[in-house]
Image 1 (cartoon, helix red, strand yellow):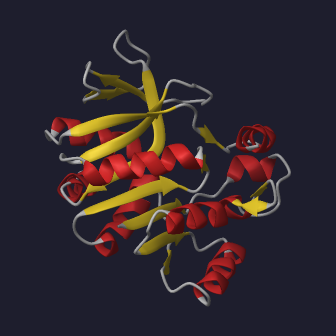
Image 2: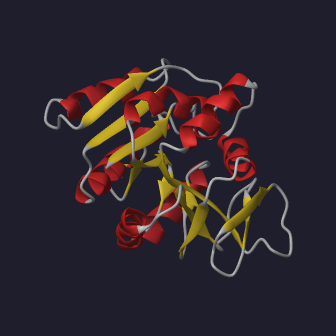
Length: 231
């Protein structure tokens, strides 16, 4: 299976708070976030790992090119995009057909839970298995409505009675999602949350998979939280 990493954001909040290196290279317990994801994906039988980063981060670009010297599975796309959904669009043509896993570079999760998540996705039918958590530590969480069978019924910016979980920023999808993605781009949409909403509108069959906790690293204070969680 192929994996994709969205690493084209500016990391502006970290920079404003004194973190001088690009977000993908921020270390958690001595390991850069981008290296951690690549290692985990390789441990889960990655056929290819496609990473998109922006034009403004030469340090990240060089780091990934250095990794390519020892691992031919890593593929790099350099392009500045207006949103994470546009970054996904730049990746989709090289993710091929069938199943793939996509995540943002700062998504922090337990490795054992991720392994079970990937195995569940490999065994399932349907169009997607979305990582969710009931741990909320996000400035603008995307709430997910599910039924008793964990089928996803909708994505919402505000909490509702039927929204026990929020999106974890890890997306296991099939190429059936590409038609929705292309429509979103053509209609001028942006942001991954709007793409997720559109998949439901388009009738794609999406299941939720619960993680105990998923963290994002958006602020300098999040680095210690992530390190403590991974310990």
